[in-house]
Amino acid sequence: MKSMRCLKEYFKGIWKDRYVLISLVRQDLQMKYNRSILGVAWQIITPLGLSFIIGAVYSIIYGVSPIEFMPILFSGLNPWLFVTSSADGGTNSYISAEGYLKQTQVSPQIFPIRTVLVAFINLLYAMGAFFIVYLFLQPQNFSLCMLAIIPGLIIILLAGVGLANFSSAITVNVRDFQPLQSLILQGVFYATPIIYLPTMLDEKGYSLVYKLNPFYHIINVVRSAALGMGTESVTYYFEVFACVTVFFLISAVVTMKNNHGIAMKL
Amino acid sequence: MSYIELENIDLVFNVWHQKRIKDVIIPGSNKFSDYSDGKVHAIDNLSLSLKDGDRLAIIGHNGAGKSTLLKVISGIYPPSSGTMKVVGNISSMFELATGFEMEQSGWNNIYLRGLMLGLSPQEIKSKMDEIAEFSELGNYLNMPVKYYSSGMFVRLAFSVSTAIEPDILLLDEIIAAGDAAFLDKANKRLQKMINTSKIMVFVTHNMQSALSMCNKCIWMQQGKIMLSGSPEFVTNEYLNKSMNR
Image 1 (spheres, rainbow over the protein chains, first blue to last red):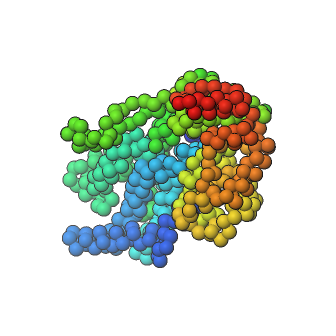
Image 2 (image 1 turned 180 degrees about the vertical axis):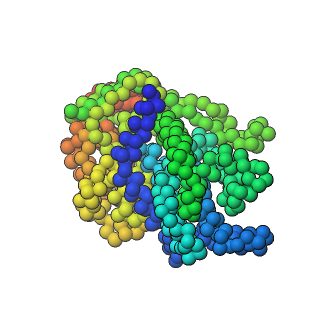
Image 3 (image 1 turned 90 degrees about the horizontal axis):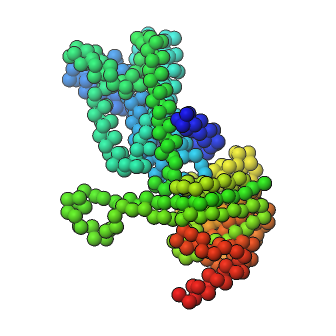
């Protein structure tokens, strides 16, 4: 019952301060590339550049065709960058909002969401760029299967909010969490098939490494849809959605418990 | 009808000692921080009842718990024990020079602060010109607030916070950083606001302000109410005790 009340308060607070949230996100997006010549184009250049670099390395060392491999990299790196931005940004979301939390009655739970929404809008730009590049490289793969990207994006957004909720709540109490989380995410990056294919792990008999890795599935719901291969079933999407929703709801309860007297913890 | 009911309120702060790895390996190496983890009893079994028409002044020495009490009433600090009921729309003015988006212009900060005070986008947009005019910041409003002086921050924050009409007004001694002309203008607006808001709680070190603006007064010391009564009586007692110390 207590958890239900926490959830009710969580959503009520977000609704009450929805305009503050929208305004903060808009300002963050404007400020992110303030005084930068290329501006928001960096959101497209960064994953594209990384894909070129890694694609070139793979084609030289392993002889993999860059035309085939680059879209796989690009479509995996975009959601991965969103996941890390949400988790890393979450650690600082309450600390940077200290001024507001110590003198206004604004709902604290909007601050982790603020970080995630900024990262999510950047993800949308980056996925737009992906589709343009993909259209040039492999137009034959474009199909209606790609519409699965809509539920995929909803799932990854929920996962991002959940991650930011947890990382922000933990950091308020344990300040060592931020560098620790960065280290863990670095490890997860190499353990998750992002810059290599899951089949590589299958061949070596390490399928469980990615099958039990929640980050793989969070990224896969976006990537498999973006590549238009139609490899994942509707049931798979429902399963990932159910798991992510539970994760998000638990994070919301933790957030509300942590928010009690948050101004005194900062 | 608005009211504030506090009954046996306690507020205990946990004070965390910053422990570094060096402190663990070499005990006693940090000679400038020898306090241990502890608790500060900022509000101690305090009861208070205010209703429409009450204008309460809170006086007392630094660290008596005056500003903390305001933050308890505003809901920013939840009490550790006791019961609290606050009914009415609150506007508070605490540390004015914090809570800004430093890279944003004065205009954007007016908009954001208005939203945080509970105004809708339409309401704050309709008040923007009036707020800008009152602040007298002119073209500076187009500039990022990171270039503002402390006086300019006070002008901006005060102009927004006083542009709304709250039921309960909570004021900490805040406008000291403004220049003489603004101070005079701010005091006039405050007086007008005091007349329209239903309840006011005002923390001050200025006895004259307590006398001219309030009809009730409490003297706080170490988180407790030492004395409560009319502003004339409490301020006199407080001054007499302070002189004889």
